[in-house]
Length: 500
Ligand code: MV4
Image (cartoon, rainbow, N blue to C red):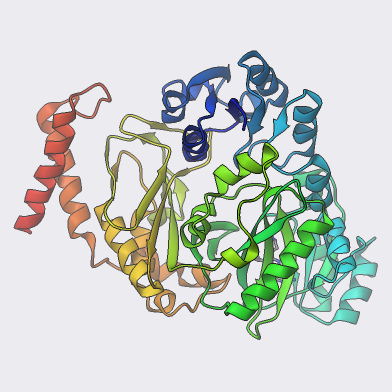
């Protein structure tokens, strides 16, 4: 195992990796921007190195500076987390060229999966089902019209260099194809510097189901089952769960084996995920492979019993996987809610400010992967995800009740958050029935964000309590203030609650 690992990230994921390092006896090296000088991940690590001003482009995205920090602090490996440098082929290569280990796949595997058309070609060549469509990019609007007529409408135009839905256009009939092709190509050019477009048959109302993989350097590739990620808005996932109500044990085995084949085809090592669309008839189609640890990895950890981040470090240091495919089957149900600093009542507008009060849920089956504390400044420099609340219970209905209970314990003041939105989803009849697909949330959003809640008692009381305590003690919410005052604010809130 490594003596020392640098974590090229911030927030909750930096803390998650630091925790894995500590459990493995590995010294952790954090990096931070000027905006994060007092951040929790900086204090949690054994050492921390300032890498520049607040904008990511001048700090967390500066690969060379981060590699220099690793070398000067004596780290042997770099964990990129997710986002930032995690899927940049050049960074994985630069880390290797500097004589360090990139805790992730080889640069070649990132490249093989980075181009969506190249990934489709690779999948087809290895018997991995993809949505009917082209693997070559389309030359012009006339060419697009010809191919669309062949496959039949509706079709979806996608960016070859893409991902995340940028440069994507649904085309429902021939009259729209020319303008849609031009728009998709322009958007792709702007977003990726490459306007190449390909075409697929459009699948209506599918679920987004993905398979978690872990591979070592000795040829072992194991899948850890699926995650259901259909609850998303504008390509931002909001809630993930494992397993999926739509996946039977036999479908799991089949999709799992398919994902393993795709990973082998790409020469994959470390943790990765194959994304699939699962249609209403139970047919599945490979979409793309994410060549990084994902935000939603905890739901898989909870149902599989496998510590993915520890295994990332282990396989990166050359250790073989310590379990086989036969050891893996899902135990119970896990759900994750992303707690973001966004205002659900205002079209999820990002909210900024200072966390003035924070009360974390706990108790049976509750996990909090957070990156904030009282006093944290939430700015527009970084992603609005503050934390993930994850629960584990024996069944899906029990997990939903547990999540509702945990969300009702959570108090965050100082910024707007997605907490209440998640409470409403947990109360939603369709969600509870598992009747979700990728368009579900956007269809349901209006009623979820305007219906008066039933579980607001605790929240309002706690808020009132926190405000009351604020007004009584003035600077009570300062990080340097005494512990006792925040506890008494919570107690005041609880007292208030018992009166309502
Ligand atoms: C699709 C699709 C329907 N049909 N492909 C969205 C981003 C990229 N990962 C692929 N995406 C989709 N591809 C065909 N042929 C619908 C989506 C899609 C989607 C997929 C996964 C999760 C959320 C989504 C939201 C909208 C559209």
